[in-house]
Length: 164
Image 1 (tube, rainbow, N blue to C red):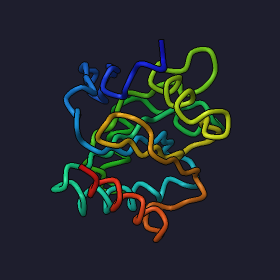
Image 2: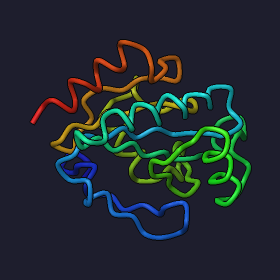
Image 3: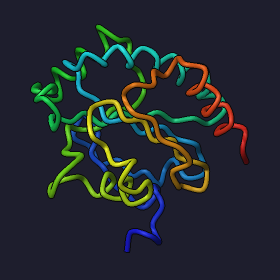
Image 4: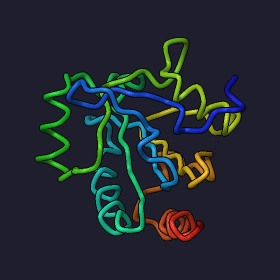
């Protein structure tokens, strides 16, 4: 049942095709963001990287989940995604394998995120950002319209990493 789960109950596949258990991040605040390299909002990768660099010593983890669900804006394979994210945006935080995030084939993690946030928080485009507390539950979420470098987002991250 989705209500008894936390984010730490999910397993994913990283961009290199290796299993990645989110349990390894237990007790850490997280940002989960669905991404697409060819989206006009892809410049948010830079803001996410900056945020991660600023707060990773406080335990923050940022995880990108590439998806081709919206506008077919992530057509590349894992190699192309890794190359673009690294060379164009300087991304060093974890990136998962390209994954469906909506519809009947959505990854169970995104089904859980939709359950946690309700109808209004369900991912509807690229670069939805979900802030996960140390308890493994969604504390806040932001659409693609909120850039990671905004005061509002930075405040939410600062609150997230401060809470024990």
